[in-house]
Amino acid sequence: MASSSTPVVQNPNNPLNLSPIATVGNTLIYTGDVMQFNIGLLKLRPEKMVDFESLKVNGFDVEELSTNQGWKRYFEMLNGPIYTNMVKEFWMKARVYDNVASRTEEEQLIKKDPSLKGKSREEMGLSTFTGTVIKYVLAGLDITISRAHFAKLLDLKDQGKRISDYKSEIYYRQSIKKELGGGTDTISWEHQHLLYFLKSGKKINLVDLLFENLCQAIRESNFRNITTLVYPKLLSELFFQTKLVKILMKAYPELVEEERAQKLDASFLTRM
Image (cartoon, rainbow, N blue to C red):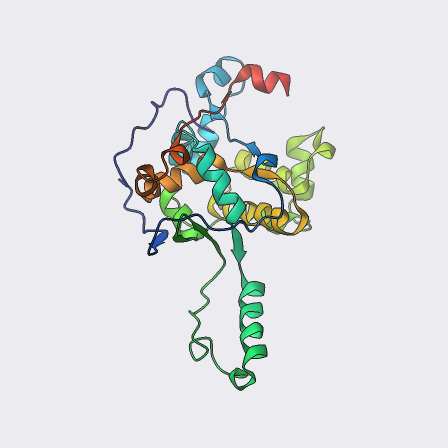
């Protein structure tokens, strides 16, 4: 979500000084897909720009809630473009490399060479596992996305209330029922906690929320053939700020064609 009073951001290359996400291979060639469905089935669920002024005039004064969270950069980012073809290619080739994937990688090596049993990852010739990342190969580029990239991109610290912790946590539920009143039965407890923390000014870990939701959506595409692509604008901004757009522009101009998403204003909320 982003403010209409904030101009569309025309960024120079990588003004945020993000660390690279791509390692350049020998040739810029396409590689096979990880997903087991056709790319034409992908459905983008784009984030919407937010017209805070329109919302305020129509009785939805929510800008201060986001400002108090330090989410200014996030809302500014939502004024930017979507590189539809690039994010679709990313999604088709993406996989989540987590603890499970790390152990599976080790087990496969041990199966091939039993003498490796009991060895460290380094002794196996593997890189140290430092946390969950998203990996994919696009046009000959080995690309790795971490939650640290999101923190830097959004100018946020990776700390605060982790919304995923409150799927079954009951500590705040009575307060939520009191503060939010009726209508809460139709939304999940995670979303109810998100609304409650926003209203009460408790810091939310937006980095964790976005990164974990992205990882879960990729897993569901990997293992359940779910064809919904989330956060295309966030991904597009990351690709731009880490110079991936610039790298691919000459070789694959069709990947960097821009589109714009809808705006979230009072009329949209009223329809909801």
